[in-house]
Image (cartoon, rainbow over all chains, first blue to last red; front, side, top):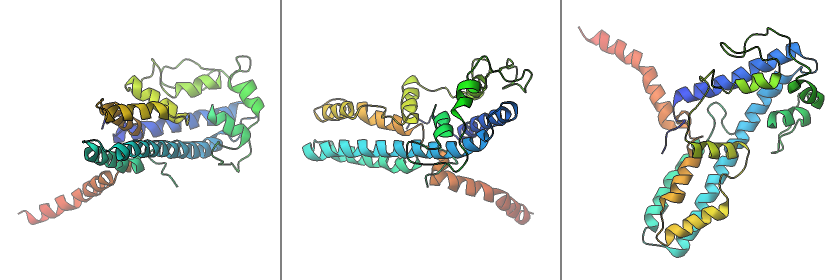
Length: 105
Length: 157
């Protein structure tokens, strides 16, 4: 698999961006009228939103695996067995599709 | 912007609701992106060497990195960025009909990697090693290293 974000330093970077946005919201709260509560809102939002993106992504991949399996079972080409194994391998990665620090609940 | 929607409506598309007081839509209309209602000058810079951004929206978007501040950037292949963008918007990266066509094509002798590689690409942005059992095992083993080294040190004359 292409190991794009599969590195701990990327997770650190990811959390830094989230924390930096929060720091800006704190600044807006102190320097604008009507912005009180923005940072608390951000904490609440980012958790719910990232969980939703992870859940959506997991369902999407799972649905595509089911879709591919359906056609391979129906037609059973010569490489069907290999394809099932490869799909099982991909399916095993689905639970890892979560943002670090934001596990699905 | 989903965060703004959440602040104003106190709800996400998936039914998650907030117990914290909503932010007025007026704040997003009149303050967040309004060049006539600026932040005070001289606030702490958004990033080292940053210009004195006076609109909140500029400060928020600066946090994702830019040509003057590369640190938060993650360089990735454009196909992967497209997939990430779609997933972040809770939209399918590829139409299921197109996926089906690629699968059927591979059954009749076409390239299997066309859809199999695509599935790997969809998983990659989110499949962090940090979520994997092997990673936690590795951290556990590393955490034991000082004890092991001490033991070896004690036993070695």
